[in-house]
Length: 370
Length: 232
Image (cartoon, rainbow over all chains, first blue to last red):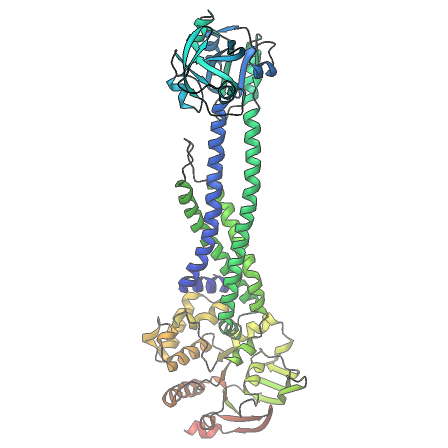
Protein backbone atom coordinates (compact mmCIF):
# COMPACT_ATOMS: atom_id res chain seq x y z
CA UNK A 1 0.00 0.00 0.00
CA UNK A 2 1.42 3.39 -0.92
CA UNK A 3 2.20 5.83 1.93
CA UNK A 4 -0.46 8.31 0.74
CA UNK A 5 -3.09 5.61 0.51
CA UNK A 6 -2.20 4.25 3.97
CA UNK A 7 -2.18 7.70 5.56
CA UNK A 8 -5.50 8.77 3.99
CA UNK A 9 -7.14 5.49 4.87
CA UNK A 10 -5.93 5.75 8.47
CA UNK A 11 -7.30 9.26 8.77
CA UNK A 12 -10.65 8.49 7.20
CA UNK A 13 -11.23 5.39 9.28
CA UNK A 14 -9.99 6.87 12.55
CA UNK A 15 -11.43 10.38 12.33
CA UNK A 16 -14.88 8.99 11.92
CA UNK A 17 -16.98 12.05 12.70
CA UNK A 18 -15.27 14.20 10.06
CA UNK A 19 -15.45 11.38 7.55
CA UNK A 20 -19.12 10.78 8.32
CA UNK A 21 -20.03 14.46 7.91
CA UNK A 22 -18.16 14.83 4.61
CA UNK A 23 -19.51 11.53 3.29
CA UNK A 24 -23.00 12.50 4.39
CA UNK A 25 -22.91 15.81 2.48
CA UNK A 26 -21.65 14.10 -0.68
CA UNK A 27 -24.13 11.28 -0.14
CA UNK A 28 -27.02 13.74 0.08
CA UNK A 29 -25.97 15.42 -3.15
CA UNK A 30 -25.55 12.08 -4.92
CA UNK A 31 -28.83 10.77 -3.48
CA UNK A 32 -30.56 13.82 -4.89
CA UNK A 33 -29.04 13.27 -8.34
CA UNK A 34 -29.51 9.49 -8.35
CA UNK A 35 -33.08 9.74 -7.08
CA UNK A 36 -33.89 12.41 -9.64
CA UNK A 37 -32.46 10.34 -12.49
CA UNK A 38 -34.28 7.18 -11.45
CA UNK A 39 -37.60 8.94 -10.90
CA UNK A 40 -37.20 10.85 -14.18
CA UNK A 41 -36.52 7.68 -16.11
CA UNK A 42 -39.52 5.94 -14.60
CA UNK A 43 -41.69 9.02 -15.09
CA UNK A 44 -40.68 9.17 -18.75
CA UNK A 45 -41.57 5.51 -19.16
CA UNK A 46 -44.89 6.10 -17.40
CA UNK A 47 -45.76 9.07 -19.61
CA UNK A 48 -44.71 7.13 -22.70
CA UNK A 49 -46.99 4.29 -21.62
CA UNK A 50 -49.86 6.75 -21.09
CA UNK A 51 -49.28 8.29 -24.51
CA UNK A 52 -49.29 4.83 -26.04
CA UNK A 53 -52.70 4.29 -24.54
CA UNK A 54 -54.11 7.63 -25.69
CA UNK A 55 -53.13 7.10 -29.31
CA UNK A 56 -51.94 4.04 -31.20
CA UNK A 57 -48.70 4.11 -33.11
CA UNK A 58 -50.37 2.71 -36.25
CA UNK A 59 -53.86 3.29 -37.60
CA UNK A 60 -55.01 1.06 -40.45
CA UNK A 61 -57.64 2.52 -42.80
CA UNK A 62 -59.01 1.94 -46.28
CA UNK A 63 -56.54 2.44 -49.13
CA UNK A 64 -56.63 6.06 -50.26
CA UNK A 65 -57.59 7.59 -46.93
CA UNK A 66 -55.18 10.14 -45.48
CA UNK A 67 -54.24 11.41 -42.10
CA UNK A 68 -56.29 14.52 -42.89
CA UNK A 69 -59.40 12.37 -43.41
CA UNK A 70 -58.74 10.71 -40.10
CA UNK A 71 -58.39 14.00 -38.30
CA UNK A 72 -61.82 15.05 -39.52
CA UNK A 73 -63.36 11.59 -39.06
CA UNK A 74 -64.79 11.54 -42.54
CA UNK A 75 -64.18 7.90 -43.33
CA UNK A 76 -67.77 7.45 -44.63
CA UNK A 77 -67.28 3.84 -45.73
CA UNK A 78 -66.85 0.64 -43.65
CA UNK A 79 -64.58 -1.60 -45.75
CA UNK A 80 -63.38 -3.95 -42.99
CA UNK A 81 -65.11 -6.57 -40.93
CA UNK A 82 -64.44 -8.70 -37.85
CA UNK A 83 -62.57 -11.28 -39.96
CA UNK A 84 -60.08 -8.61 -41.10
CA UNK A 85 -59.54 -7.66 -37.49
CA UNK A 86 -58.90 -11.27 -36.45
CA UNK A 87 -56.50 -11.76 -39.37
CA UNK A 88 -54.54 -8.60 -38.51
CA UNK A 89 -54.34 -9.71 -34.88
CA UNK A 90 -52.84 -13.04 -35.94
CA UNK A 91 -50.35 -11.46 -38.31
CA UNK A 92 -49.16 -8.87 -35.80
CA UNK A 93 -49.26 -11.18 -32.78
CA UNK A 94 -45.49 -11.24 -32.26
CA UNK A 95 -44.94 -7.49 -32.46
CA UNK A 96 -48.21 -5.89 -31.31
CA UNK A 97 -49.56 -5.68 -27.80
CA UNK A 98 -53.13 -5.13 -29.08
CA UNK A 99 -55.13 -4.61 -32.27
CA UNK A 100 -58.43 -2.81 -31.88
CA UNK A 101 -61.29 -2.30 -34.35
CA UNK A 102 -63.48 0.82 -34.63
CA UNK A 103 -66.31 2.18 -36.70
CA UNK A 104 -66.32 5.96 -37.16
CA UNK A 105 -69.34 7.59 -38.79
CA UNK A 106 -70.87 11.03 -39.10
CA UNK A 107 -74.21 11.47 -37.32
CA UNK A 108 -76.50 14.52 -37.03
CA UNK A 109 -76.81 16.03 -33.58
CA UNK A 110 -78.26 19.38 -32.59
CA UNK A 111 -78.32 20.59 -36.18
CA UNK A 112 -74.73 19.68 -36.95
CA UNK A 113 -72.78 16.63 -38.04
CA UNK A 114 -70.58 15.05 -35.42
CA UNK A 115 -68.33 11.98 -35.44
CA UNK A 116 -69.65 8.92 -33.64
CA UNK A 117 -67.00 6.33 -32.93
CA UNK A 118 -67.98 2.76 -32.14
CA UNK A 119 -65.65 0.99 -29.72
CA UNK A 120 -65.81 -2.15 -27.58
CA UNK A 121 -65.58 -1.31 -23.86
CA UNK A 122 -63.59 -4.40 -22.96
CA UNK A 123 -60.99 -4.16 -25.75
CA UNK A 124 -60.44 -0.45 -26.25
CA UNK A 125 -56.93 0.70 -25.29
CA UNK A 126 -57.47 3.83 -23.24
CA UNK A 127 -56.30 5.49 -20.04
CA UNK A 128 -59.91 6.37 -19.14
CA UNK A 129 -61.77 3.92 -16.92
CA UNK A 130 -65.18 5.32 -17.97
CA UNK A 131 -64.95 3.24 -21.15
CA UNK A 132 -65.12 0.03 -19.11
CA UNK A 133 -68.55 1.03 -17.79
CA UNK A 134 -69.98 1.91 -21.18
CA UNK A 135 -73.03 -0.09 -22.28
CA UNK A 136 -75.10 -0.21 -25.48
CA UNK A 137 -77.40 2.47 -24.02
CA UNK A 138 -74.73 4.90 -22.86
CA UNK A 139 -72.20 7.14 -24.62
CA UNK A 140 -69.06 9.04 -23.72
CA UNK A 141 -68.47 12.53 -25.09
CA UNK A 142 -65.18 14.25 -25.84
CA UNK A 143 -64.45 17.34 -23.74
CA UNK A 144 -64.51 19.86 -26.58
CA UNK A 145 -67.73 18.51 -28.12
CA UNK A 146 -69.48 18.47 -24.74
CA UNK A 147 -68.48 22.08 -24.22
CA UNK A 148 -69.61 23.26 -27.65
CA UNK A 149 -72.92 21.41 -27.48
CA UNK A 150 -73.50 22.12 -23.78
CA UNK A 151 -73.87 18.44 -22.91
CA UNK A 152 -73.05 17.05 -19.49
CA UNK A 153 -72.90 13.65 -17.78
CA UNK A 154 -76.27 12.14 -16.90
CA UNK A 155 -78.08 13.93 -19.71
CA UNK A 156 -80.18 12.07 -22.30
CA UNK A 157 -79.23 12.64 -25.93
CA UNK A 158 -80.64 11.40 -29.22
CA UNK A 159 -78.55 10.03 -32.09
CA UNK A 160 -80.20 8.81 -35.31
CA UNK A 161 -83.51 8.91 -33.41
CA UNK A 162 -82.22 6.63 -30.66
CA UNK A 163 -81.84 7.65 -27.05
CA UNK A 164 -78.60 7.39 -25.01
CA UNK A 165 -77.52 8.47 -21.57
CA UNK A 166 -74.27 10.47 -21.39
CA UNK A 167 -72.18 8.31 -19.07
CA UNK A 168 -69.36 10.84 -18.75
CA UNK A 169 -67.55 13.71 -20.44
CA UNK A 170 -63.98 12.56 -21.14
CA UNK A 171 -60.99 14.59 -19.96
CA UNK A 172 -59.30 16.71 -22.61
CA UNK A 173 -56.61 14.86 -24.59
CA UNK A 174 -55.64 17.56 -27.09
CA UNK A 175 -56.53 15.15 -29.90
CA UNK A 176 -59.36 14.67 -32.37
CA UNK A 177 -61.04 12.43 -29.81
CA UNK A 178 -62.04 15.56 -27.90
CA UNK A 179 -64.58 16.24 -30.65
CA UNK A 180 -66.29 12.84 -30.93
CA UNK A 181 -68.99 10.86 -29.20
CA UNK A 182 -68.10 7.27 -28.29
CA UNK A 183 -70.82 4.68 -28.74
CA UNK A 184 -70.79 0.94 -28.07
CA UNK A 185 -69.52 -0.66 -31.32
CA UNK A 186 -72.37 -3.22 -31.60
CA UNK A 187 -75.01 -0.51 -31.09
CA UNK A 188 -73.47 1.73 -33.75
CA UNK A 189 -73.27 -1.17 -36.20
CA UNK A 190 -76.96 -1.95 -35.56
CA UNK A 191 -78.01 1.71 -35.93
CA UNK A 192 -76.44 1.95 -39.37
CA UNK A 193 -77.17 -1.64 -40.38
CA UNK A 194 -73.51 -2.48 -40.69
CA UNK A 195 -73.22 -5.64 -38.59
CA UNK A 196 -69.60 -6.69 -38.02
CA UNK A 197 -68.32 -3.78 -40.09
CA UNK A 198 -65.33 -1.60 -39.19
CA UNK A 199 -63.50 1.24 -40.93
CA UNK A 200 -60.44 1.63 -38.76
CA UNK A 201 -58.11 -0.77 -36.99
CA UNK A 202 -55.53 0.39 -34.47
CA UNK A 203 -52.28 -1.46 -33.88
CA UNK A 204 -50.46 -0.95 -30.56
CA UNK A 205 -46.88 -2.14 -31.00
CA UNK A 206 -45.37 -4.26 -28.25
CA UNK A 207 -42.52 -2.78 -26.18
CA UNK A 208 -39.37 -2.69 -28.29
CA UNK A 209 -41.16 -3.57 -31.52
CA UNK A 210 -40.01 -1.71 -34.61
CA UNK A 211 -42.91 0.37 -35.92
CA UNK A 212 -41.50 0.65 -39.46
CA UNK A 213 -41.29 -3.14 -39.73
CA UNK A 214 -44.89 -3.46 -38.58
CA UNK A 215 -46.06 -0.83 -41.08
CA UNK A 216 -44.17 -2.61 -43.89
CA UNK A 217 -45.78 -5.94 -42.90
CA UNK A 218 -49.31 -4.52 -43.03
CA UNK A 219 -48.66 -2.70 -46.30
CA UNK A 220 -47.20 -5.85 -47.91
CA UNK A 221 -49.98 -8.22 -46.87
CA UNK A 222 -52.95 -5.87 -47.28
CA UNK A 223 -52.81 -3.84 -50.47
CA UNK A 224 -56.35 -2.64 -49.68
CA UNK A 225 -55.25 -1.05 -46.42
CA UNK A 226 -53.21 2.06 -45.60
CA UNK A 227 -51.17 1.90 -42.37
CA UNK A 228 -50.59 5.41 -41.03
CA UNK A 229 -48.13 6.08 -38.24
CA UNK A 230 -49.15 8.50 -35.53
CA UNK A 231 -46.71 11.21 -34.63
CA UNK A 232 -48.68 13.04 -31.98
CA UNK A 233 -47.59 10.91 -29.09
CA UNK A 234 -44.00 10.65 -30.30
CA UNK A 235 -43.73 14.41 -30.69
CA UNK A 236 -45.14 15.09 -27.26
CA UNK A 237 -42.87 12.48 -25.74
CA UNK A 238 -39.79 13.79 -27.53
CA UNK A 239 -40.52 17.34 -26.49
CA UNK A 240 -41.09 16.30 -22.89
CA UNK A 241 -37.86 14.28 -22.81
CA UNK A 242 -35.83 17.16 -24.20
CA UNK A 243 -37.24 19.59 -21.67
CA UNK A 244 -36.70 17.23 -18.75
CA UNK A 245 -33.18 16.39 -19.93
CA UNK A 246 -32.26 20.08 -20.04
CA UNK A 247 -33.59 20.64 -16.52
CA UNK A 248 -31.83 17.56 -15.23
CA UNK A 249 -28.51 18.61 -16.73
CA UNK A 250 -28.69 21.87 -14.80
CA UNK A 251 -29.54 20.00 -11.59
CA UNK A 252 -26.65 17.55 -12.11
CA UNK A 253 -24.28 20.45 -12.68
CA UNK A 254 -25.46 22.03 -9.42
CA UNK A 255 -25.02 18.66 -7.65
CA UNK A 256 -21.48 18.37 -9.02
CA UNK A 257 -20.63 21.86 -7.80
CA UNK A 258 -22.07 21.02 -4.35
CA UNK A 259 -19.85 17.93 -4.13
CA UNK A 260 -16.70 19.74 -5.26
CA UNK A 261 -17.31 22.73 -2.96
CA UNK A 262 -18.10 20.45 0.01
CA UNK A 263 -14.82 18.60 -0.41
CA UNK A 264 -12.99 21.88 -1.00
CA UNK A 265 -14.30 23.35 2.27
CA UNK A 266 -13.74 20.13 4.19
CA UNK A 267 -10.21 19.67 2.84
CA UNK A 268 -9.37 23.30 3.52
CA UNK A 269 -10.60 23.19 7.13
CA UNK A 270 -8.97 19.82 7.60
CA UNK A 271 -5.69 21.06 6.10
CA UNK A 272 -5.71 24.17 8.29
CA UNK A 273 -6.36 22.13 11.43
CA UNK A 274 -3.61 19.71 10.52
CA UNK A 275 -0.84 22.08 9.45
CA UNK A 276 1.45 20.79 12.21
CA UNK A 277 0.71 17.17 11.34
CA UNK A 278 1.50 17.77 7.67
CA UNK A 279 4.70 19.67 8.54
CA UNK A 280 5.76 16.79 10.80
CA UNK A 281 5.04 14.39 7.97
CA UNK A 282 7.52 16.32 5.82
CA UNK A 283 10.08 16.37 8.66
CA UNK A 284 9.95 12.62 9.10
CA UNK A 285 10.52 12.00 5.42
CA UNK A 286 7.40 12.80 3.45
CA UNK A 287 7.71 14.97 0.38
CA UNK A 288 5.35 17.71 -0.77
CA UNK A 289 4.09 15.21 -3.33
CA UNK A 290 3.24 12.75 -0.54
CA UNK A 291 1.13 15.44 1.13
CA UNK A 292 -0.62 16.35 -2.15
CA UNK A 293 -1.34 12.71 -2.97
CA UNK A 294 -2.59 12.05 0.55
CA UNK A 295 -5.10 14.92 0.41
CA UNK A 296 -6.26 14.02 -3.11
CA UNK A 297 -6.60 10.35 -2.18
CA UNK A 298 -8.62 11.31 0.86
CA UNK A 299 -10.90 13.47 -1.30
CA UNK A 300 -11.32 10.64 -3.79
CA UNK A 301 -12.14 8.17 -0.99
CA UNK A 302 -14.82 10.56 0.28
CA UNK A 303 -16.23 10.74 -3.24
CA UNK A 304 -16.44 6.94 -3.44
CA UNK A 305 -17.99 6.56 0.03
CA UNK A 306 -20.43 9.43 -0.61
CA UNK A 307 -21.41 8.10 -4.02
CA UNK A 308 -22.14 4.60 -2.72
CA UNK A 309 -24.15 6.00 0.18
CA UNK A 310 -25.95 8.39 -2.14
CA UNK A 311 -26.83 5.69 -4.65
CA UNK A 312 -28.39 3.56 -1.92
CA UNK A 313 -30.31 6.56 -0.56
CA UNK A 314 -31.29 7.67 -4.08
CA UNK A 315 -32.69 4.24 -4.91
CA UNK A 316 -34.60 4.20 -1.62
CA UNK A 317 -36.00 7.69 -2.26
CA UNK A 318 -37.01 6.85 -5.82
CA UNK A 319 -38.70 3.61 -4.77
CA UNK A 320 -40.82 5.63 -2.36
CA UNK A 321 -42.24 7.80 -5.17
CA UNK A 322 -45.80 7.29 -6.44
CA UNK A 323 -45.78 7.65 -10.22
CA UNK A 324 -49.53 6.97 -10.50
CA UNK A 325 -48.62 4.41 -13.12
CA UNK A 326 -48.01 0.72 -13.46
CA UNK A 327 -44.45 1.55 -14.51
CA UNK A 328 -42.00 0.54 -11.80
CA UNK A 329 -38.85 2.36 -10.77
CA UNK A 330 -35.94 -0.01 -11.22
CA UNK A 331 -32.46 0.54 -9.77
CA UNK A 332 -30.37 1.40 -12.82
CA UNK A 333 -27.05 -0.45 -12.55
CA UNK A 334 -25.61 1.53 -15.44
CA UNK A 335 -25.76 4.61 -13.20
CA UNK A 336 -23.53 3.17 -10.47
CA UNK A 337 -20.28 3.35 -12.42
CA UNK A 338 -20.81 6.82 -13.81
CA UNK A 339 -21.98 8.26 -10.47
CA UNK A 340 -19.06 6.76 -8.52
CA UNK A 341 -16.55 7.89 -11.14
CA UNK A 342 -17.98 11.41 -11.37
CA UNK A 343 -18.24 11.81 -7.62
CA UNK A 344 -14.66 10.54 -7.14
CA UNK A 345 -13.26 12.88 -9.77
CA UNK A 346 -15.21 15.88 -8.47
CA UNK A 347 -14.10 15.16 -4.91
CA UNK A 348 -10.48 14.87 -5.97
CA UNK A 349 -10.78 18.13 -7.92
CA UNK A 350 -12.41 19.73 -4.88
CA UNK A 351 -9.46 18.65 -2.73
CA UNK A 352 -6.92 20.05 -5.20
CA UNK A 353 -6.73 23.65 -3.87
CA UNK A 354 -6.34 22.41 -0.29
CA UNK A 355 -3.62 19.99 -1.43
CA UNK A 356 -1.83 22.82 -3.20
CA UNK A 357 -2.00 25.01 -0.09
CA UNK A 358 -0.77 22.23 2.18
CA UNK A 359 2.12 21.42 -0.13
CA UNK A 360 3.19 25.04 -0.40
CA UNK A 361 3.29 25.74 3.35
CA UNK A 362 6.72 26.16 4.93
CA UNK A 363 7.03 23.16 7.30
CA UNK A 364 9.89 24.73 9.25
CA UNK A 365 7.83 27.82 10.00
CA UNK A 366 4.89 25.66 11.13
CA UNK A 367 7.14 23.49 13.32
CA UNK A 368 8.84 26.50 14.91
CA UNK A 369 5.49 28.19 15.60
CA UNK A 370 4.36 25.04 17.41
CA UNK B 1 29.95 12.25 9.15
CA UNK B 2 28.07 15.56 9.06
CA UNK B 3 29.80 18.74 8.04
CA UNK B 4 28.25 22.18 8.26
CA UNK B 5 30.45 24.42 6.16
CA UNK B 6 30.15 28.18 6.71
CA UNK B 7 26.36 28.04 6.79
CA UNK B 8 24.46 31.27 7.13
CA UNK B 9 20.76 31.93 7.09
CA UNK B 10 18.97 35.23 6.80
CA UNK B 11 15.25 35.82 6.92
CA UNK B 12 13.49 38.92 5.68
CA UNK B 13 12.65 41.06 8.74
CA UNK B 14 9.49 43.03 9.35
CA UNK B 15 11.09 46.37 8.50
CA UNK B 16 12.72 44.99 5.35
CA UNK B 17 16.20 44.50 6.79
CA UNK B 18 17.34 40.84 6.95
CA UNK B 19 17.38 38.98 10.28
CA UNK B 20 20.35 36.67 10.73
CA UNK B 21 19.44 33.26 12.17
CA UNK B 22 22.76 31.57 11.41
CA UNK B 23 26.03 33.29 10.85
CA UNK B 24 28.93 31.48 9.23
CA UNK B 25 28.47 28.28 11.22
CA UNK B 26 30.96 25.49 10.64
CA UNK B 27 30.78 22.19 12.48
CA UNK B 28 32.10 18.69 11.97
CA UNK B 29 30.03 16.05 13.71
CA UNK B 30 31.44 12.58 14.03
CA UNK B 31 29.57 9.33 14.37
CA UNK B 32 28.64 8.52 17.99
CA UNK B 33 28.75 12.08 19.26
CA UNK B 34 26.02 13.49 21.52
CA UNK B 35 26.14 17.15 20.64
CA UNK B 36 24.28 19.57 22.86
CA UNK B 37 23.43 22.84 21.13
CA UNK B 38 22.69 25.56 23.63
CA UNK B 39 21.97 29.22 23.54
CA UNK B 40 19.28 31.73 24.38
CA UNK B 41 15.96 31.92 22.55
CA UNK B 42 16.46 33.13 19.00
CA UNK B 43 20.12 32.14 18.95
CA UNK B 44 19.57 29.84 15.95
CA UNK B 45 19.47 26.40 17.64
CA UNK B 46 16.35 25.18 15.84
CA UNK B 47 17.40 26.79 12.56
CA UNK B 48 20.71 24.91 12.77
CA UNK B 49 18.93 21.60 13.38
CA UNK B 50 16.49 22.15 10.52
CA UNK B 51 19.37 23.19 8.28
CA UNK B 52 21.30 20.03 9.10
CA UNK B 53 18.09 18.04 8.67
CA UNK B 54 17.60 19.12 5.07
CA UNK B 55 14.55 21.24 5.77
CA UNK B 56 15.97 24.77 5.89
CA UNK B 57 18.03 25.82 2.90
CA UNK B 58 20.96 27.96 4.12
CA UNK B 59 21.40 31.35 2.47
CA UNK B 60 25.08 30.58 2.16
CA UNK B 61 27.34 27.63 2.87
CA UNK B 62 26.81 23.90 2.68
CA UNK B 63 25.69 20.93 4.70
CA UNK B 64 27.40 17.66 3.84
CA UNK B 65 25.92 14.39 4.95
CA UNK B 66 28.68 11.81 4.49
CA UNK B 67 29.76 13.04 1.04
CA UNK B 68 26.39 14.30 -0.10
CA UNK B 69 25.82 18.02 -0.36
CA UNK B 70 22.31 18.00 1.15
CA UNK B 71 21.04 21.09 -0.65
CA UNK B 72 22.32 20.09 -4.06
CA UNK B 73 19.95 17.10 -3.84
CA UNK B 74 16.45 17.34 -5.30
CA UNK B 75 13.62 17.86 -2.79
CA UNK B 76 12.55 14.24 -3.35
CA UNK B 77 16.05 12.97 -2.53
CA UNK B 78 16.24 15.27 0.50
CA UNK B 79 12.94 13.79 1.70
CA UNK B 80 14.44 10.32 1.19
CA UNK B 81 17.52 11.38 3.18
CA UNK B 82 15.32 12.60 6.04
CA UNK B 83 13.35 9.40 6.23
CA UNK B 84 16.29 7.02 5.96
CA UNK B 85 19.19 8.75 7.70
CA UNK B 86 17.68 11.31 10.06
CA UNK B 87 15.29 11.02 12.99
CA UNK B 88 13.52 14.17 14.17
CA UNK B 89 12.26 14.72 17.71
CA UNK B 90 10.29 17.85 18.61
CA UNK B 91 9.51 19.71 21.80
CA UNK B 92 5.75 19.32 21.16
CA UNK B 93 6.12 15.62 20.18
CA UNK B 94 4.00 16.19 17.05
CA UNK B 95 2.34 12.79 17.12
CA UNK B 96 -0.61 12.14 14.84
CA UNK B 97 -3.57 12.38 17.24
CA UNK B 98 -5.80 9.76 15.65
CA UNK B 99 -3.10 7.09 15.28
CA UNK B 100 -2.16 4.75 18.11
CA UNK B 101 1.43 4.46 19.35
CA UNK B 102 2.38 1.68 16.96
CA UNK B 103 0.94 3.43 13.91
CA UNK B 104 2.58 6.72 14.92
CA UNK B 105 5.93 5.01 15.18
CA UNK B 106 5.72 3.32 11.78
CA UNK B 107 4.83 6.48 9.82
CA UNK B 108 8.45 7.10 8.66
CA UNK B 109 8.77 3.39 7.79
CA UNK B 110 5.58 3.54 5.71
CA UNK B 111 6.94 6.65 3.99
CA UNK B 112 10.15 4.71 3.27
CA UNK B 113 8.09 1.96 1.64
CA UNK B 114 9.00 -0.68 4.23
CA UNK B 115 6.76 -3.66 4.85
CA UNK B 116 4.05 -2.87 7.38
CA UNK B 117 4.42 -6.20 9.16
CA UNK B 118 8.17 -5.82 9.71
CA UNK B 119 7.75 -2.19 10.68
CA UNK B 120 5.12 -3.07 13.27
CA UNK B 121 7.41 -5.71 14.77
CA UNK B 122 10.31 -3.25 14.90
CA UNK B 123 8.03 -0.55 16.37
CA UNK B 124 6.84 -2.99 19.03
CA UNK B 125 10.47 -3.77 19.98
CA UNK B 126 11.30 -0.07 20.22
CA UNK B 127 8.22 0.77 22.28
CA UNK B 128 8.92 -2.16 24.61
CA UNK B 129 12.54 -1.09 24.94
CA UNK B 130 11.41 2.40 25.95
CA UNK B 131 8.96 1.04 28.52
CA UNK B 132 5.73 1.40 26.54
CA UNK B 133 4.84 -2.28 26.10
CA UNK B 134 1.41 -1.70 27.63
CA UNK B 135 0.71 1.40 25.55
CA UNK B 136 1.02 0.00 22.03
CA UNK B 137 -2.60 0.58 21.06
CA UNK B 138 -3.09 3.81 23.00
CA UNK B 139 -3.61 7.09 21.25
CA UNK B 140 -1.44 10.13 22.16
CA UNK B 141 -4.31 11.70 24.14
CA UNK B 142 -4.28 8.64 26.42
CA UNK B 143 -0.57 9.02 27.27
CA UNK B 144 1.36 11.21 29.68
CA UNK B 145 3.60 13.85 28.09
CA UNK B 146 6.68 11.79 28.97
CA UNK B 147 5.19 8.76 27.28
CA UNK B 148 4.34 10.84 24.22
CA UNK B 149 7.94 11.96 23.95
CA UNK B 150 9.10 8.35 24.22
CA UNK B 151 6.75 7.43 21.37
CA UNK B 152 8.21 10.31 19.36
CA UNK B 153 11.70 8.95 20.11
CA UNK B 154 10.63 5.53 18.84
CA UNK B 155 9.32 7.16 15.69
CA UNK B 156 12.69 8.84 15.16
CA UNK B 157 14.44 5.47 15.54
CA UNK B 158 12.18 3.31 13.34
CA UNK B 159 14.31 3.64 10.21
CA UNK B 160 17.63 3.18 12.12
CA UNK B 161 18.80 6.73 11.37
CA UNK B 162 22.39 7.86 11.26
CA UNK B 163 21.57 10.85 13.45
CA UNK B 164 18.77 12.01 15.72
CA UNK B 165 18.00 15.72 15.63
CA UNK B 166 16.15 16.60 18.81
CA UNK B 167 14.77 20.12 19.13
CA UNK B 168 14.18 20.89 22.82
CA UNK B 169 12.86 17.33 23.43
CA UNK B 170 12.47 17.99 27.17
CA UNK B 171 11.06 21.51 26.86
CA UNK B 172 7.54 20.40 27.77
CA UNK B 173 8.48 17.83 30.42
CA UNK B 174 8.77 18.06 34.18
CA UNK B 175 12.01 17.21 35.96
CA UNK B 176 11.27 13.51 36.42
CA UNK B 177 10.19 12.99 32.83
CA UNK B 178 13.13 15.04 31.60
CA UNK B 179 15.37 12.65 33.52
CA UNK B 180 13.68 9.66 31.86
CA UNK B 181 14.06 11.04 28.35
CA UNK B 182 17.68 12.06 28.94
CA UNK B 183 18.40 8.60 30.26
CA UNK B 184 17.02 7.11 27.06
CA UNK B 185 19.01 9.49 24.89
CA UNK B 186 22.24 8.72 26.80
CA UNK B 187 21.52 5.02 26.49
CA UNK B 188 20.98 5.34 22.74
CA UNK B 189 24.19 7.33 22.45
CA UNK B 190 26.01 4.72 24.46
CA UNK B 191 24.89 2.22 21.82
CA UNK B 192 26.55 4.38 19.16
CA UNK B 193 23.66 6.58 18.11
CA UNK B 194 24.68 10.07 16.99
CA UNK B 195 22.47 12.73 18.54
CA UNK B 196 22.23 16.49 18.10
CA UNK B 197 20.04 18.05 20.72
CA UNK B 198 19.03 21.68 21.07
CA UNK B 199 18.24 22.82 24.61
CA UNK B 200 18.20 25.98 26.64
CA UNK B 201 18.63 24.03 29.89
CA UNK B 202 22.27 24.44 31.03
CA UNK B 203 22.05 21.39 33.31
CA UNK B 204 21.15 19.11 30.42
CA UNK B 205 23.86 20.63 28.28
CA UNK B 206 26.46 18.89 30.38
CA UNK B 207 25.03 15.46 29.62
CA UNK B 208 26.27 15.34 26.03
CA UNK B 209 29.71 14.51 24.73
CA UNK B 210 30.09 17.90 23.16
CA UNK B 211 28.69 21.34 23.79
CA UNK B 212 28.13 23.88 21.06
CA UNK B 213 26.97 27.29 22.19
CA UNK B 214 25.24 29.63 19.79
CA UNK B 215 24.62 33.30 20.17
CA UNK B 216 22.95 35.46 17.52
CA UNK B 217 23.37 32.63 15.07
CA UNK B 218 27.11 32.22 15.53
CA UNK B 219 29.05 29.45 17.30
CA UNK B 220 30.64 31.07 20.33
CA UNK B 221 31.83 27.91 22.06
CA UNK B 222 32.51 24.34 20.88
CA UNK B 223 33.75 22.04 23.62
CA UNK B 224 34.07 18.26 23.76
CA UNK B 225 33.98 16.34 27.05
CA UNK B 226 33.48 12.81 25.86
CA UNK B 227 35.68 11.28 28.57
CA UNK B 228 33.71 12.74 31.47
CA UNK B 229 30.42 11.42 30.10
CA UNK B 230 31.92 8.05 29.41
CA UNK B 231 33.11 7.84 33.01
CA UNK B 232 29.75 8.96 34.41
